[in-house]
Every structure is written in C-alpha cells, then in structure tokens.
Amino acid sequence: MTSEAPQRSEQRSWIMPVAIAMLVCICIGCDQGTKLVARDQLAPKQWVEVVPSVFSLTNVENTGAFLGLGSELGAWRAPLMVWLPGAVLFGLLGYIILGKQLPSNQRLIMALIVGGGFGNLIDRIRYGSVTDFLHLDFGLFRTGIFNVADLLITTGMVVLLFMSFKAKK
Image (tube, rainbow, N blue to C red; front, side, top):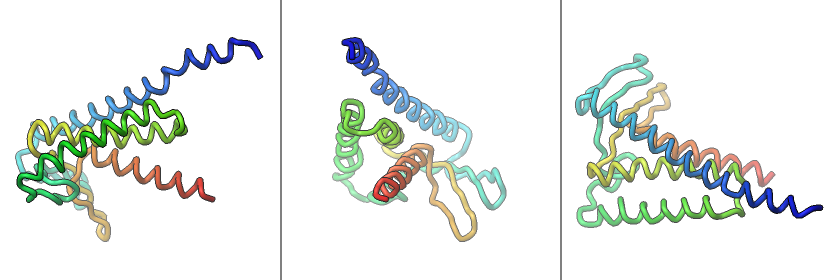
C-alpha cells in the first residue's frame, strides 16, 4: 500500500461534514420557507381543505412543545423551550459533524432531526411560538397540527428506530 491512500482519505474527510451542514441548512430553509408561506397566505386559525376530509392547512401558533405541551411554563418557558433545546441541538450537530464513530447514513438521518429542531427553535426565538399548519385525518388516525420541522424530526426518529431494530437482528 502506498502513502497515497491515507492522503486521499484525508482529502475527502471534509465531504461528510459539508454534506451534514448542507442538509441541516436545506431542512431549515424548507421549514422556514413553508412557515413563511403559511403565515403569509393563511389567516390565523383559517382552515383550507386541500384533500377534503384528509389533508388540511391552517395557521396555528404553538407556544409549547409537542401538541402544545409546556405552553403554561411561565418563567421556565425560555430555559426549557429555547436554551436547553438550543444547547442540545448545537451539541448534537457537533457530534454528528465531528464524530466519525457513527456510520454516514446515521449521521445524515440525525441531520434531519437537527435541521427540524433548529427550524422550530428559530420560530421560538423570533416569534415566541412555532407556526404549525399541516393536518392529516385518515379517520382512525388523525394528527395534531404540525409543520415541516416536526415532520423532519419524526421521520428521522422513526428511521433511526427502524435502523436500530434492524441492526439488532
């Protein structure tokens, strides 16, 4: 083996961190862009059926976390809804960018979660609430009102869970 192999590996070591950073930025951009359209085009609490009885758009400001939990925290709201999630997100971002012990596919899936988390964090910092605007109703299965960031976070978590169960087999 020549000394060229380690040199090529070192030259490519920037690819994954750049890919992760770009994916996080794309996730944030998609989330913030769709929320901007929702705030601009939908009056507060207005309902627009896209697919009758299945898929609706509405504009709801969520001052809490998942399904409004924690909206009544008072003075604890900023530490628990902004500072703590911000610290966790920056820590997780550093871990997936710098931590080479994770497989590339897991690092990219975790970037979806981080991107979604930052999308909601930006809303909390800018507006004091998170803009939710998507609603699905399949009869027996009905979602709360959510946004693209929530979709990214949930998708990332489900894929990571699936990957962990698959790895145990």
